[in-house]
Image 1 (cartoon, rainbow, N blue to C red):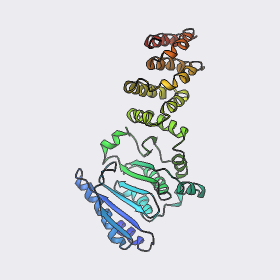
Image 2 (cartoon, rainbow, N blue to C red):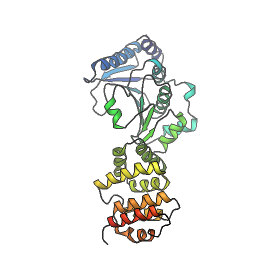
Image 3 (cartoon, helix red, strand yellow):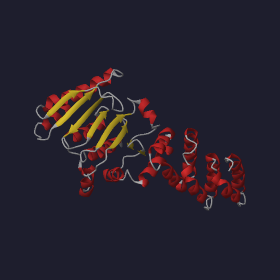
Image 4 (tube, rainbow, N blue to C red):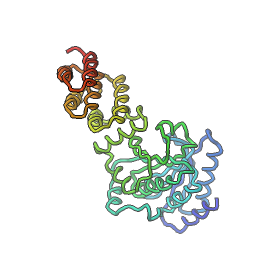
Length: 327
């Protein structure tokens, strides 16, 4: 608590205001109490200029939590104790003084300040992780430079069920908008560029592949259905995928087709074009996928593939043809 008091006293000399909100939980009373003491102790030590309140906010991903709202900055949630290695980035965030090792070029700061779409960055950490503090710093720095950015620092050991929702097996794990998964502490500038590009097809494609790579099939299907161009993003990822990635994409496709048989109808022509590519395994996997989609438009192109030089492709194509809906 001495570190908290020291940090709080440092705020007394600052003119900018800070709102600290504590969100309790009955699930882990000891952890909840510890977070409350940090939030209240910080506010008491700071005195004037810091507003403390308590709220039962059901919009947070998990509780207990502390929320920090600096004037003209984004929102920062803590679902972790800022102790040990995590104390320094916490204190820097409170004092709005992120270490120079985690700086941002001025042009990116301007772009972040002009951001007109909300963005969320969740940072999953463990208290013993040596790289987690840098991931936390990077996320904090973006939130301190944009009102549109919300960050959440989440201790994987305190919230195992929520952590399992994203199939997280190692930390730090940074997740942008619950789609792009980054299993490393990337530099703030790189993180900023990703956030600024999050509406682009390239970001969405990489995000889809990251979800599939980490086994988040349910999340990838949700993304597929929520995006207006979800099928097109899938097609682009499919064309560039390696064998490992296609295994995940195929599993995703199977489950998505179970929910909506027509979900990939708009990209059947694009998949037919893939049948002409030089990659043997890609041709075979695409024939398999077209068979699962079952659109009659694929019949003639698949018949042509029966003359493929690779016998495995021919066998897969025969099975695919049997699955097509009659014209």
